[in-house]
Length: 227
Ligand SMILES: C[S@@+](CC[C@H](N)C(=O)[O-])C[C@H]1O[C@@H](n2cnc3c(N)ncnc32)[C@H](O)[C@@H]1O
Image 1: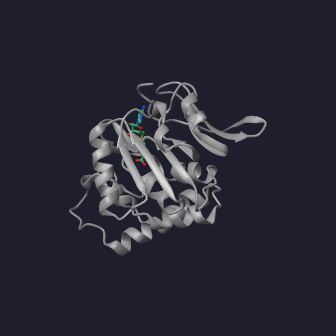
Image 2 (image 1 turned 30 degrees about the vertical axis):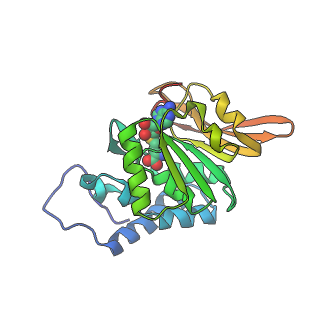
């Protein structure tokens, strides 16, 4: 794939063109996401469409399509592209769905969901990040995403119930308020485990017989604070 930057800035380079960024995004989907087994064509199209570089601080944009998380300020990160695609596919998003995200961060995951579902609600505990993500999502035309600053541990009761919930920070156990805000048949993907350690990415389904849970992948997410 087109390599867009590393630690050594090397000789001065001009900013990548839109065509180079689009080509890097296509390569990201092929080499990082399809190659690791994500097959949902709607999710792959969304990952190809959303301009990840627009959600990265200006000085880091040339690294936007590398295979890893990147800092977004305030000690937080935008997740690795594969992890965004994998978690999105686990939710099995449908065009009519209403989805809750806990941990807006840069707003990128919300933008990916925006084109796949009817409405996205996203909560970010770091107020300046919430403000920036809200402004970026508005600037880029993502009209079905609502962002608010606050502690996502208790979910968004006024907007519940949700068809799907995605948690992009790691609590030490599944927050029960979020389970309650899932519709029957609803799906939740959440990394659960110790702070700054390896967590289990858990997929939950609310079925008529109760909650089905499945650990789908080991991950490392920043901790969920508050609660
Ligand atoms: C890995 S980052 C999220 C990446 C984000 N989804 C994106 O697309 O850029 C995790 C985010 O969760 C936020 N967070 C941590 N605890 C939270 C809480 N209790 N409620 C809401 N957000 C929280 C962090 O501030 C951080 O921005």
